[in-house]
Figure 1 (cartoon, one colour):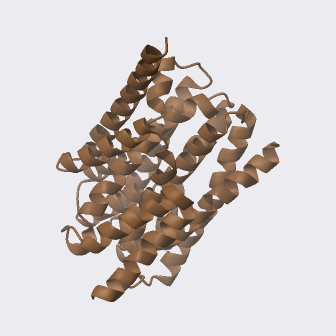
Figure 2 (cartoon, rainbow over the protein chains, first blue to last red):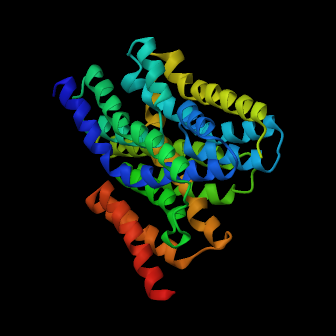
Length: 237
Length: 107
């Protein structure tokens, strides 16, 4: 595989998420305009932050007249999960130049992370430069759509009718991202533990329940893999 | 109305803060070799973080005022099955399709 092929491969692998990114970014545009932001402000938020969930959180809190630092802390807490993405990407794309790593960090969204990591694990023969090209391919599609349809939503300003239940597009997107990642027993265990503890810790303020649940899932998944390997060794010495 | 100064203070700090979170490990560790033990745990980040994100949204949807909705739960199961069996695009199409179909039947 050449880097060019890897780029287009990432581009195509991320294409299905256009179905989610389009309505979700439009919704942000509409909600932001409703909250009284002008078009420049709406776009600035989408371009500077590119993290939908935290943008909605920040906006809602600002509208409720929450103090800036409260809105900021709550929105940042939603994004803390990305520190885990950042760590998980180190073995794959950590070798790249500092400047490239900075751009890849800016572009690190759930879709790019999940799709790229799945492919890296499926194809261990990918060389480091190929992995970087693939990563950029993933985001080359998502990012323009994210900006473009935020703008469209802000300009049109017409919410998609509630009958379309677009709220459900967000969990469906995450389910679509999760499905290919649960490919072994330990992965299933990690997903179950994290999913269930996320419900149990949903009461924890500042979205920190998410981090507790994710951390626990990662720990249990890793432990399960280590135990399975030990048993396999024990049974065939 | 959201005050202009408030807005820009928040947006710029959120942009910088989010970037620093994303850059953290990738930026500081760079190409350094991680211990094997860490590599094992890191393989489970995706499988753990994503369900932790969607489970509360799924079980307590805002659209129903936070009470569980059988139609959404069934559609999510359909999406998961389609995703595991056929791939990403099918998870999305089957998930939304099942939701619309069941809503059409039962409302």
